[in-house]
Image 1: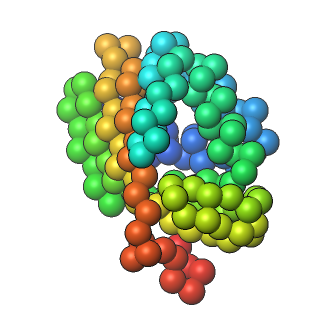
Image 2 (image 1 turned 45 degrees about the vertical axis):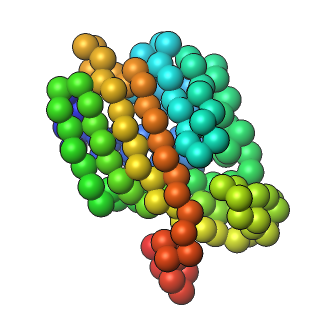
Length: 145
């Protein structure tokens, strides 16, 4: 089972991988995911199957913006599933469009993430579906987290 404290370590490890140059995503994947795991990102319905695809997806995001997952606001788990909700802050490294909204270089924005994880018998993630939702009400106020 991926209990709440272990899930917090997972998020801390992901944030640490984001803090670097993108090369730690492979190590992160190996620690937390089955080799043939699927990481699905909604709203684009992008399915990244296996390590190479998931790491490539995370690195491509990392190339254009810095990402930090904040403390979850909801967490539910069973032996085989985890469901969470948390804000994610993004800091743009270049002009870009994300989830249908345009941002300038150095801009920041927040998405609300809901994540649904299927846990394997070896206690690693085998299928992850992440929904990221933009709404002006979720945005940072006065630059605070």
